[in-house]
Length: 74
Image (cartoon, rainbow, N blue to C red; front, side):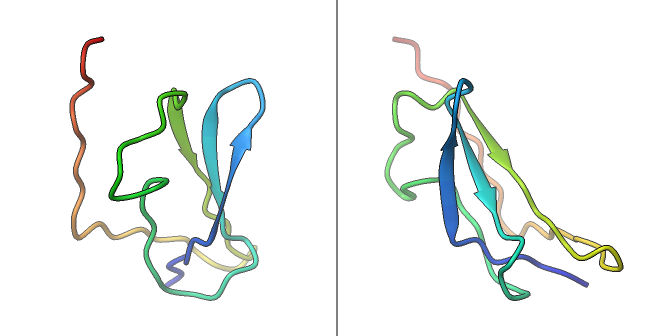
């Protein structure tokens, strides 16, 4: 089983998305939204999570806590 540890996020040009990448990180760990527990930055339209394993590995995600908040009207 592969569980990825997330250390890096970068802005993806043209999409205003955040991309998490963990291709060269050790097994195990957690991931969360940018700047957690603070609010999302106002220019974030979506979040893009990328989890990459080796060709002979399976990437498995187990959520122990998953919380989605509604969008505030402006």
